[in-house]
Structures are given as C-alpha cells and as structure tokens.
Length: 514
Image 1 (cartoon, rainbow, N blue to C red):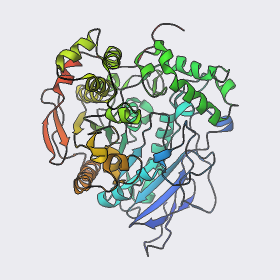
Image 2: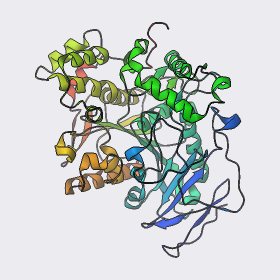
Image 3: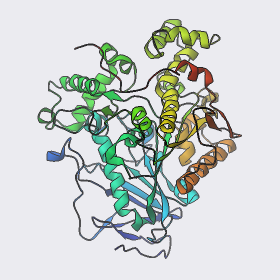
Image 4: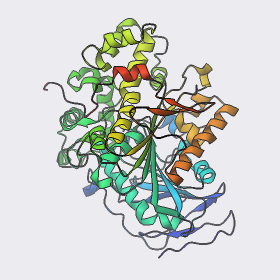
C-alpha cells in the first residue's frame, strides 16, 4: 500500500506514495521535510468560494521541496515571512510534513499546526512555523497547512458554504487521516494545535460535526472569543462587497480578482468604528471570524462543548497573562491611553450594563492604560478560554488549563506575557516573526529553557493525552503556570473570573438595522 525509501544518508531524497501520487522530500536537520503537497484542488474558477474539492492525481514523483503559495490576504507578510521569497500561484491548499523518518511502521503521534492571523493573514511557510524542533525533540510527525483566510475563507457569501477556511482545515485533516501512515505517523493519534485564530479555528472544529473523529486531542493557545452570528456575518460581507459596488454573492464576486477583494476587506477593517451596529466587533482589528451559520458550524463552541460535542477529545487550553499588550505596542498606544479611551473600552467590552463600574471597583489601583488593556485581554482571550474549559467539563470532556506568565525580555520587558509570545517559544523560532521583538536579538537561557519545557509538555500530551498536570474542574480550577519555575495553582486571574462569572459567551449579534 505504501512505498518509501530507506534512510541512507542526509543527502537522500525519500519518496513517499500518497493517495494522489508520489512526493519526494529531503533530509534537513535530522528530519525529513515534505513541503507544498496539495490536499485539495486550487479554489479558483468554478471552485471559487466552494468547499474544497479532492485533489487531482498526478503521475510520476512530485518534488515536495518548496512551500505552496499563501492564500490571498490583506497585507504583505512583513515579519511573518522574513526575507523568504513568497511563492506565486493559485495552489493555496497545501500541507507540509516534518517526520523523524518516513517509515510506515513507525506509527508516531501526529501534531497538526493551524496558524493564526486574525482570520485574515497567515502562511504555513513562514519561518516562524519551521517545525523541525518539535518533530525532532518530540519524536513526532508534524503537519502544517494553508487554509483560506479573509474574504476567500470567512466572508458570508450568498451561494457559498460558510466558513470555507474551516472546511479547508477539515479537508487537510482528512488528508492526514488518509496519508499520514506513509510518513511514519499514526492516523489514530492526531493532536491539533493552534494559536490565536488557529486556536479559534480549533474551537470551531470541536463544535463541527464534519470534524468529528479526525483528531483525538487539541491544544488551543490564546483562543479569541469572536464568533459571528449569521446575521452579523452577512451584514459585514454586505459592507465589504459594497466597496467594489457589488452584492455579497458568488455570482457577483467570483469574477473579481481575489487581491482586489482583499483590498476591500482591508478598507472595511480600517473603518469599522463607523459600523456601530456590529457592536464590540467594530472596535477590533478584524472583520473576519467563524460564522455560526447553523450548518457548517451549528453552534458557538461554548454551547456545543457544554452539550458534549467534544467529550471524546482531550483539550489543553490557555492564554497569556498580558495578551492585549501586544496590540497596544503594535498600534503605538503604549503610554498614550487616557481616561476617555479607558472609559470607552470599559463601556464596549465590560460584562453587563455596569461592566465599567465593576472593573473600576475590582481594580481600584489600575490606571487608564491598565484598565484599557485588562478589559480587552479578558473579553477577547482570557475569559473565553476559561469559559470554554468550563464548557468542556460540563459536557463530560476533559480539559487542562494553563497560563503563560513569563515576561518577554525584548524591548526592556515592556510587553510582558503578551499575545504571540507562545509561538516563538513553541517552535524555537527565536529569530522569526515576533521572536526578535519579544525575545531580543539573542534569546536568553531562560527563553531556551522555557521553550524546551513547552515543547516537552505539548509533545508528551500528543503522545499520551496527559500534559503532566492535573485536569481542570470548575471547583478547583487548577491551572499550569508557565514561567521560569512552572507550577500548578488555582486559576490565577480570580478577580477577572468573578467579574465574568455570569456572562454567557456565544455568537456575537448584529445590533439594530442597516
């Protein structure tokens, strides 16, 4: 069934036969890497805005030496791609595999990485997602994948399935199930792992019937709590299509160049404050999120997990202590937030009608910037994660909670344990993406030690289903604290937890009418 060459030398180019055809990889840093393997047809022409279609078979051996092209998206990759030239073309839907040895008898655990990027950016070929350290240190087969983002992947377009980006992820996981044995992996021991929008995607997958049975375990790092109601998603798509003088339908948009549509999405994203009917979403950085459409995504993750949708999946979920601080820095707002800005943020994001007063009472010593940061960290990341752990426990599943509290030393430590810090630590990608900003020009011994510790915990979880600390329950709320000296303690953000105790996270509504 499966053909693979032996491992003769570092200069060998192992060949693996997949269901669609043979691919040739390369030994690099003591692992074999296969790049740019298509898992679905290019989503162009009649396949534009459609669910992913099965990939066409090929004859001969296909070189899998280069990453496939990134999906269309709003901006240049900047620090996401570094100095690497980005490939061109329409074959956006590809996977990459790192394996210690493509031996079909090996049956190694498999880790599938799903990138973040506010559902509008992302590329599995970024140097920040070089999985050599995870595969080698953890003795795992690691798969990374591209999926459609922005308008192509998440805009609610009439005549097209919702959440096409999520359907791409399902198709990639189906590719893993069908083909990963040939690369030395065990299709019955798959863990999905993602950060930010990648973690939000996994939360959606846990709620999607189409994803059931495709993975046994999940790691959600800094999951954003934004999931759109169908009405909200439709209204946002209408506003984006209006920027090019069209309706949000397949008939109108399929003839428009994807790059022109990304410009329209960027324009709406930059002017969202005028759309007050979008509620808190109008005050965020992205016009895209998974849509609870009732079909592809029947329910928001909290409701689905509480109903038992993921009771057969073991979940690690967590966040960083100072998530929103990264966005303050990238927006040039550190040290600039005044009382008016803090009051506006508390009004928009605070829980309930008295959320602003509740925050000021709960954090009496907090100044404007701290309040501004706290309420958005809680609304977008910390409390959605905590409530999802509660939902998983309520639905009869098992969850493990963590919080990353280690302060990033870059830029004088001003960013603390901010959003995105976990990425370079997990991949040991110290010089890529956010690594230089957060860790400085040369990673410290502490950074390297914590990096190795996190990889060991995640690898152990992929192998055994046990990350190495006590499971979460709504009474004790035990949480693993990731820092120089890791520990386990009751959930440390108790003040915030109390403020949000009665809040119900669900699909975000459309407020008012156009």
